[in-house]
Image (cartoon, rainbow, N blue to C red):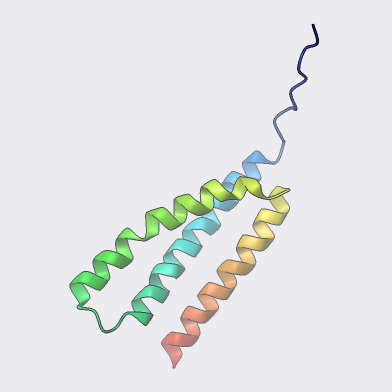
Length: 96
């Protein structure tokens, strides 16, 4: 009877997890800010609640999806670049 050989746990799981936690928070908060900028026709009470409640699903989605990256370095680079784009777009919208 042949035994199935399991692959060991990858060593970069910690770096992927930290990328998902830190940069996922940046993406979630930046996405919430972009939503606030683009939904000015809604009443502030509704807009604020939607912006607040959209943060956890985005953050957890990024945290769950970060393990599809091939390495922790790629996760940091891609999420960092995306976070920079989101925050740059948010800054550009606020300045205009």
